[in-house]
Amino acid sequence: MALLDITDLQLAMRSYEGETQILHGVNLKIERGQIWGMVGETGSGKSLTGLSISRLIPTPPGRYLSGSILLEGQDLMTASDRSIRALRGRHIGMIFQDPTTNLNPVFRVGTQLVDVALHAGEADPSVLGLSAGASRRDRKRAARETAIDALEKVGIPNAAQRIDDYPHQFSGGMRQRVLIAMAMIGKPDLLIADEPTTALDVSVQAQILRLIHQLVLERHIGVLLITHNLGVVAQICTHVAVMYRGRILESGPVLDVLKRPSHSYTQALLDSVPTVHTKRGELRGLSGIAPDAFA
Amino acid sequence: MSLTIQNVSKIFPGQRQGLFGRSEGFNALDDVTLSVKTGASFGLVGESGSGKTTLTRCILRLESLSAGRVLFNDTDIHKLSAQEMRRLRSRMQIVFQDPYASLNPRMTIHDIIAEPMVIHHDTVGLSARQRTERVAQLLGQVGLRTEHLYRFPHEFSGGQRQRVGIARALAVGPELLILDEPTSALDMSVQAEVLNLLHNLQQELGLTYFFISHDLGVIRYICDEVAVIYRGRIVEQGRSADVFERPQNDYTRMLLEAIPDPDPERSPFRQAASA
Image 1 (cartoon, each protein chain N blue to C red):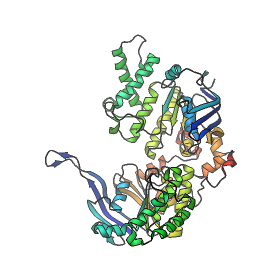
Image 2: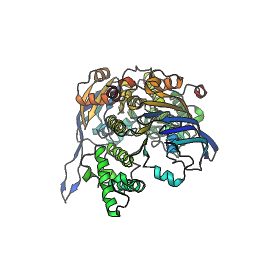
Image 3: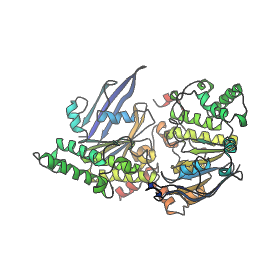
Image 4: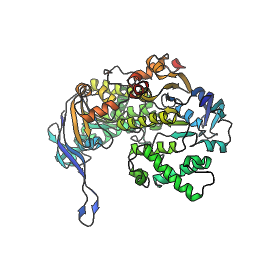
């Protein structure tokens, strides 16, 4: 059974100008140990697909026209809010793009991590290494230890002291690591990373990618990496899905799709990346091409 | 036009300590020397916090220097009077990083692009009607249409907004254009279009670019010369082909290796996994 199985997901969003269909039947299957890259331009529906998996799209304004999302056989579309809440952070971990806005500036990093650990521990005490009947105090202490441990795992030096710092005392790359640590505390089976490195420098980006890659090797989890950077996809992803206007145009193993793209849009995306070998004037934008050409 | 930066240092003062004391200052720029060739593109690469933006602020005299000189056509711009400096500013313009934050949401595109011409009325000397004509011409140059004249920034996409930012910078006919990460907020595909636009404009208008970015692919694509800045020091500079193909400095090499290559066969992770 696939870890994640999305079939024919169709989503419409309501606005003042009426309802627009955003996702036109997305199909995706992720197995454990796979890192799926999802690429596409702004507005192609990559983030909304990611948010749909953890059911973070409020309905209304969103409305699912059809589709099912199965996480290890459990249908997320029909699951109750309560059971979804138990899945979030436990079975599905999420990392968002902007590490500055996704940490609360008025709470210590540790407080925020401990919250997550306690929440995960409620659903499954083994996350904290405790038995079900442990006292409140024991749980708090264990949650703090788990948090320190998670920070150490993502390579924050001096984690036991840094945990009492506020987010502004961390650099951008370290804040992103804190978010990754937060997502990994519940030992999720599926990690959804929405543009995790877009706001970061290349050298920090390389560290974060290494970290995600290592997590997959160690814990044998599945990852959905949403990005518009084809370089990142080529680096760490095993599979890639190319999205355009709410559809997946092409998907498959990275080596097949990026080396021998069968779709002209994928080729056009590849041509728009300046590499070390591109000569001036060779770069191609995409807006000259008629939008229907890819539909 | 020539721009020379000689031994520029900038130290930001430290925190106050007690009544008279101050803690040690932060050395944002440390003895930076650069010269930008007329009609060429000069690229400045560095990570966040390396001093790229401080250097541009020093070039535009938005920041005072702790030491050194910035020569624009052989005049030290930090010695000019405020009035002379204002006149000079029409010859050097800047395009900002974030096209969403750098356009006033309450002004129409026409007013945004015409504003520099109003400010520099004494040097540009255009009447209101001539300004409108010039704005229409600029819109054409950056690939927008005259029907966009009286729209507001929120009606445009990121790429289009950045085009407006470029049109605004070109309005007063500058010789030097400072581009502070002009494409980092844009999609790859849109980035390619903006880069090509910048390349064409340079050939048409004979502009000199001072291009700042942390994306080495972009710098390699657009720049003739490049300098790598690390913690306020220039660690390497030279022709971009040389720097990119034969980097001399360890830091430059590390930066180059960190660029994710869109060729999946060059991935270090995949090699490790298959080995």
